[in-house]
Amino acid sequence: MSKLTGDVAVVSGSGRGIGRAIALKLAAEGASVVVNDIDPEPAGETVDLIRSRGGRAAATVGDVTAPDFAQRFVGTALETFGGLDIIVNNAGYTWDSVIQKMTDEQWHTMLEVHLTAPFRILRAASEYIRSAAKTEAGAGAGPAADAGTGASASRPKHRRVVNISSNSGLFGNAGQVNYASAKAALIGLTRTLAKEWGRYNVTVNCVAYGLIETRLTQSLSSDRAEIDITGRTIKVGLQSSLIETLNRLVPLGRPGTPEEAADAVYLFCSPESRYISGQIVSCSGGLLL
Image (cartoon, rainbow, N blue to C red; front, side, top):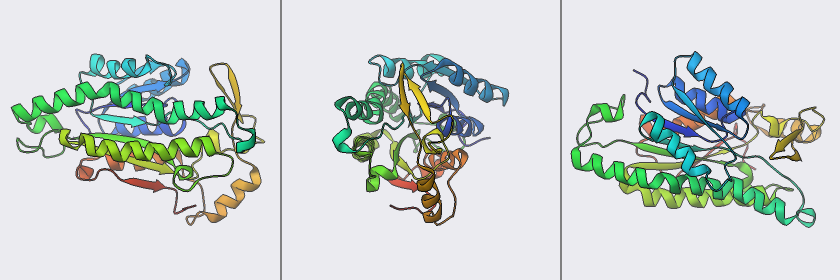
């Protein structure tokens, strides 16, 4: 039996890149997964990939910053799969500029995507998390309640939250005062919620990524160095010279793959992590700057 069999996960921003790799990893370990993307096509592709491999998946298409998104996202998990056990706040992108050129729109957009959206998703999930934990504590949780973990009546179901931050949030990064500030604040949210939700047997942790191969870290000379967000075209990517420098600085000598990034999230979702909470792991090949 896979280690996440019986669990239900929601993964925001899972139509592409790291998010897709996370969704596929959790599904491969037995979880039913609610996929999300702002566009229907990539969300549908991820759902189809999971189903083609024998997994269970559904999609909630939409912008994570929309006021009604969080309730729809959580609602899909509860209505389609009957529960919610793993929350991965992954959706996001960058909109870079030095501070003297940064607009209020750039600043607030990054806070909305990387901080407010995770907050709303977690708040939307809180009623179910609290209710389920109290019910399970009163009834006693048997092995079926936490499949693959060796759970017993004395060990209630273990739920997990994994928030996605960045080395920019840990150490700052020139040209990313908006993104770095939001990702740093997400660490505060993580550590606070770990204290609030520990009583419900929920671990809350954070993975901070370094240089991972995605659309956001490709060369600016690439023909994919632009993304469209609700009709707004945003340049993404890095200067080729910066990519070369970062590759030299990474102790492992290369960028990480989306699959390796997903493995770091899975560490916090696995049964072996049930007593680890409030922690931040840098998945960066040893790059700490």
